[in-house]
View 1 (spheres, helix red, strand yellow):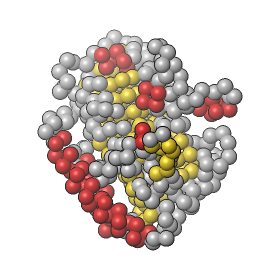
View 2: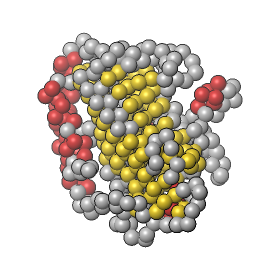
View 3: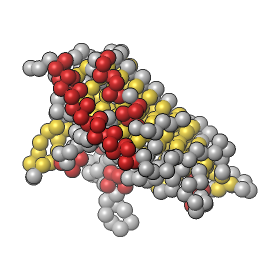
Length: 364
């Protein structure tokens, strides 16, 4: 068995090559116009009371944005539960609320449920809020998918396809900023599918693969809360990165707290597993937890494998093959170095600088 030190050294060589490839891609992205700065004061307000000069729905406020896509559009959303399935395709949109526990954007839908055209929604289509444009900001609000995952699991006739995304940052999304938000679901809560993202001072809650996708994301000073689901044994997986192998950095969790709902057993949740979506061999998941506190629900092995289909057969992508690492883990869920739980050295941390995550973009 190779030592953790050797496995990390080998990974560093891979990181060095991938960094050059990724930064070349960032140089191409640099030809895009610089992001506009959102206005400090909202352009419009959405309120339940429907007073003069306000909108009664978030969708109506989005539809009222000026035709010039370079103009920032800041929507202040008042207290209340806003049950709307939202799709944001315009750049420079800011959604600000009255507080995480006061402004709640929600929808209840799952991948296996039927669309109006009788097809299934699918994982991406299940999102309560979908963003497909650059320079999106959300602050002081909650985004939830309230599909009843637990009840569906307990029903003998429950739907097959319980993925229920709260927020999806999809094709076209880039330079997204989420501050002081709560993103809550069960399976597949936060889909970081594309672009570059900062998530700061926020709560992300779920059970199975609840932070997943191929984006380059810094998740900083957040609570990462694992939720209990029916059954014994493995209760969930925090992250499921599907990072392209040419991209040096995927998900970086820094100074986060990994907590759990009451009753979630010790050792029942993995830090993550590498997702090779669609059997795409170019995907080599990258996720790192740096200076994070972990409760005892984290499995001693840290990471585990994930299956994928390849030429009609099933295969496994293992943690040793992927890019899954830790540094400075603390708390009862932290573990010692092993073949699956690879610990970075101080010198390795340069790989996870924001310049490698975001290139020339530095969010304010």
